[in-house]
Amino acid sequence: MVIVKSLGKRHHSTRKLSTKLKLKGYQISKSTVHNYLRNQLAVRAFKRPKKPKLTQNQMINRLKFCQKVKDSTVNDWKKVMWSDESLFELFHSSNTQNDRIWAHSTQDVLPRETIKNPPKIMVWGMMSYRGLSDLHFIPPKQIVNALYYVSDILEGTCLNTLKRRRINGPVYSRKLVLKRSEAHFMQDGAPAHRAIVAQEWCKKQFSSFWTKDEWPGNSPDLNPIQNIWGILKQSIDEMKQPKNVEQLKNQLELHGKIFNPNG
Image (cartoon, rainbow, N blue to C red):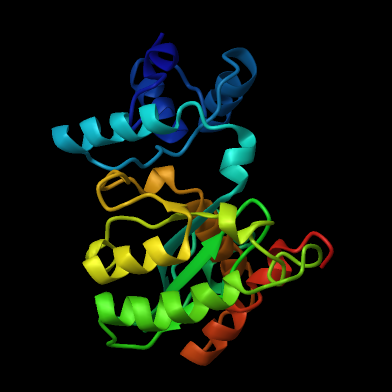
């Protein structure tokens, strides 16, 4: 019953369950607890999923957005270009649960070097069903205000991506949508994105986009590009650790090959 009652509850590792059972007079190891959970109860351990803590108003706006797009077809979603910024850190701490080394003692395990306040790179990117944009590296200490967002990111990287002509080929060099006139642009509610100058730029460049009043705030989980950022960070963790910012940039620029099915 101790094991069964633990299902769905926090702080019930196999080690703690084994300790509880031993206190009750049962000499059961944590490996036995693990086997019982997997084989007899057919359950396994999951990481607790993260989700934004929403205000009541944000919940209402998310519901309105979902009602607005609920009838969208697969072809409609194929025309959406999703954009976002993400932060990448030098000497990033990988998932310690997966970063294990089998050895006879701790003396045989190489330490993982860490530094205080590691350098970080803010990166902007865009994706669609068909492909990926180039990455835009935001210079250190650069504030992403409306002027920089429009002049450097939208007029630069975003517009260059929209000018692509290749229909086939690697995901990092082909058109994100077959017809630019059908492209639907997504950006979140960051202050620079909500600025009048950015909204006006989008009106001129796209036949449709979610305006500052349509995209619900605090909703990164609705943006599938978050999955790309996660996969990219995991891939970089598995590469040779970069020693400086330039090496980290070089690894990030390999993203096209990482996601290219023909690469």
